Length: 132
Image (cartoon, rainbow, N blue to C red):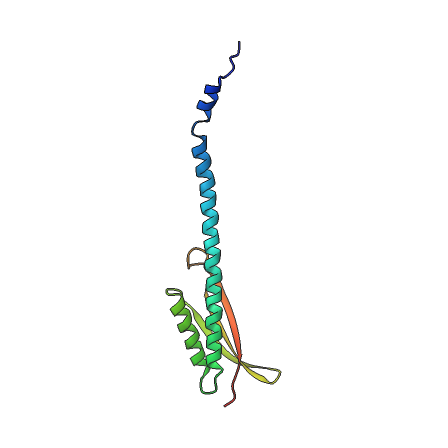
């Protein structure tokens, strides 16, 4: 003969399931939140590098400045905005359709875990060089 469980038995069997459900859902929400924060940090680093590279290109394009001045300015701005991140700037001159251009490339680690990562994020900026 089978006995049918009573309503009180069902409640006793379900006891503790809300705690497990909360832990599972909360861990998923926290993981998604941390992933979103890491994505925001990566976009911030890219935007900061782009801004620093443009400022370096603008400085290097001035008539009384050199390419080394632009490199130094780009690295200084990136270091000031993102303390602890190693950045490398390279400057070069080129010409497009008869206009002299200054190109600044700025590289930093791609932030995957915090500010550290295995790859390299490289941005570049151009400015039209002033004639002396």
